[in-house]
Length: 118
Image 1 (tube, rainbow, N blue to C red):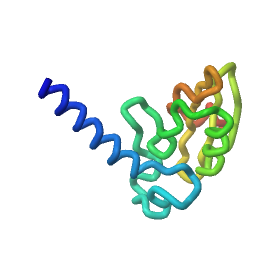
Image 2 (image 1 turned 180 degrees about the horizontal axis):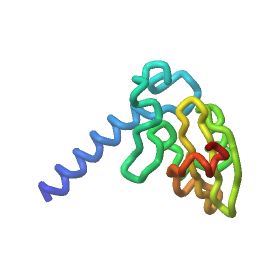
Image 3 (image 1 turned 90 degrees about the vertical axis):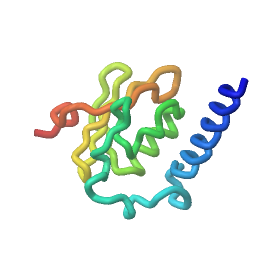
Image 4 (image 1 turned 30 degrees about the vertical axis):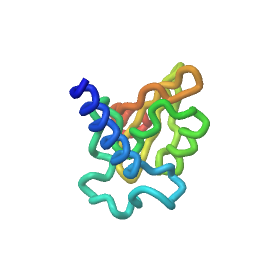
């Protein structure tokens, strides 16, 4: 029982800590993009392979997430089935999103040629 309680407290602290780091894209919360060191500017990826600047959009409703992609500098380039490719010219990242059940289920990266880049 002690182990479960300790794990629950640790998870609660982690969730509370991470919640303060996320941005809804409204520009009034989270860390402004201008404060992110250039070396980390969407070059870092999460363990799941999503670019760090859009990883929070996993499981987000697709309509809202598409708007957030554009607000964060990504432009739609093409769609193949449920996979959409997005290009960010500032970071030169070609991101992929897989939509299922109306949500972004998977976010990852692809080589630049999938986004129409050489």
